[in-house]
Image (cartoon, rainbow, N blue to C red; front, side, top):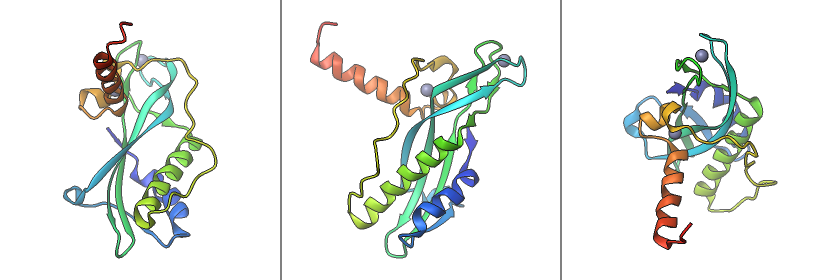
Length: 168
Ligand SMILES: [Zn+2]
Ligand SMILES: [Zn+2]
């Protein structure tokens, strides 16, 4: 787990300042009300064997507390490491700036919707990755911690398709 709360602070402040929402990093995890997960594209450079790879299968989880009366958002954000496919050492992702911007925009939009109940539409949909890689459960730190949104989504689909028994 990698805490990226600091990395997102300025972006979130910019996205939320026009609606007079104050943004703070959450100090007491016991205040957490909710969480949201966003899939992101990241890059890894293994510092051990120098292997490098990209993955569209990482994620950012926001844990947050939103005070509707005072319009204060307190949050923590974390992302996850992956094991190197070559040497199996855990590596910290390098998140593309455009991905941080996108996630900040979508999370801010979700907060605005909660606060004002308006569905302000953003231009375009969240960018779905067209990379053909698959989620590697055995290399994913979030899976090991039981927090993986990508794996949960897959399991849900499997359950659904199982129920529908499409015979595929
Ligand atoms: Zn390696
Ligand atoms: Zn996973």
